[in-house]
Amino acid sequence: MTDLEFEQYITSVIKEYGENYIDEALIDNTPHKFSREFERKMDILMGKSHKKIKITPKNLLIAITAALLAVFIMAMSVSAVREAFINFFMNIFDTNTVVQSVEDMDAPLDFIDKYEITADMSDYENFDISEFISEREYTYENENCTIYFTQYIKEYYHISINTEGYDIETIYINGCEGFYVDMYNQNGKIITWDNGDYVLSILVSCDVDYKFSKNQLIDIANSVQKVE
Image 1 (tube, rainbow, N blue to C red):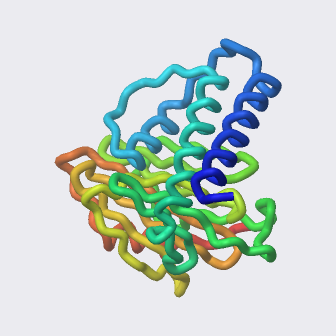
Image 2: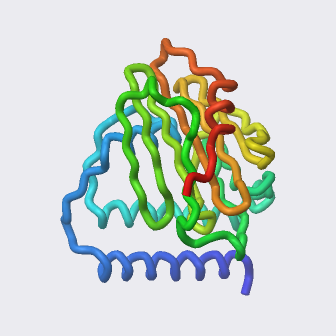
């Protein structure tokens, strides 16, 4: 089988599986609306404006299936750009970077240990905690900034970051390797690191005229500790 034939075969299998899964797993036209915090976080990561999004689960899964299919095919055809970056794999494309945790069979599959920011966050009035099978997220918000601290199960860590025109820097948090991206034209910054058991990430988004420094973000990241 040639490379082209193999690619066509894989494409057809993924499309067929995705369509069958969508039809069997979801009910058509089930309404759903993402929370404002989720929308803002995804907008920052993908470099989009903050717009309200209404979407059905079926349409969402169709979009995800198409995106995963595109990434899969691109990874086969441009595998040279897929490289290990510290404790992460990165598929680097023209406008975004898909970041995935390196496989670790010893990493926990649940939140037996829980981490929190221990720095003084009293300036942030609104506070929220969300927990899912793949991640735990703390949201801190005041009139100037929103900070998202997320603890990920490593097996599920797989995100896309808008890196068009931005540099990905290696950074160390509490002695653990990670990466930092300054999304300067969105006034957003993200630090992500692997502490051996979990992937920990802090994303900050501020008003355009408010200055939040890299060192401030590093200080908050270094304060993250296991609390349970």
